[in-house]
Image 1 (spheres, one colour):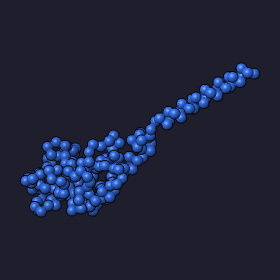
Image 2 (cartoon, helix red, strand yellow):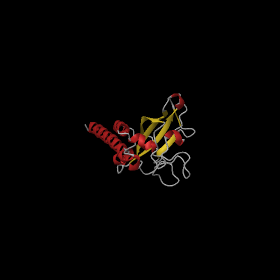
Image 3 (cartoon, rainbow, N blue to C red):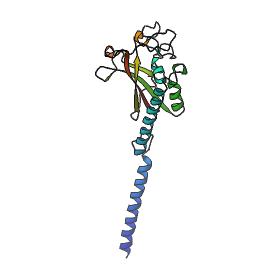
Image 4 (tube, one colour):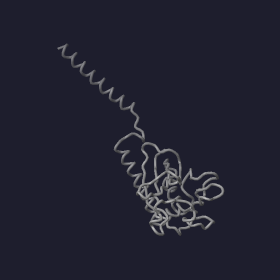
Amino acid sequence: MNRGQAHTLEAFVAVLLLVSGIIFALQATAVTPLSASTSNQQIENQQRAIAADILAAADSDGSLKEATLCRYPASHNETPRQFVGTDENQTSFVEGGPPSECGGFGPLLNETYDDRGIAYNVRVYTHLESGGMDDVNGSLDHMVDMGSPTDNAVTAGRTVVLYENDTLITDDNVTVAESGLYQDRSATERGQIHAVIEVEVTVWRM
């Protein structure tokens, strides 16, 4: 009888140690916002959908194109290819989207992401004749540059067509065809189309 009680006690102690070990392991494993999980995947999908909705809304009201045209021409004396409203000697915005003078795209980005611990980059790619995009020879422009995205960053993009007579939003009254910007190698085959560009928003939690 005493031997049976001893075996029972040993089994109970073994189970208790096993459960304690599992509890300790779970407590020692920190679950962070960057941990891979179904929940985080849902968050990433939601962030991608929000970025896509922002681009769609800005494209619908014309402010997406306005933001891409809110630049100084390549021949600008001070900082060539600079977006209007950026700090001196900078070609990109680093603390938020383009100002309201460049249309509603920037304010929409700021209203959505400011004070939420979310950073974002906005890049503008020029399409090539092959249908792809290029980041060589000035075919990639950084509209907003908040840093290097994390591994959990998500991206959404939107295509914008620029016509030769579209005018830059500056005091110079220069058309995009005269600006030296967004040089599309296949533009001569498209008549009045100067370039097909892609505006890409990359979002991540800081």
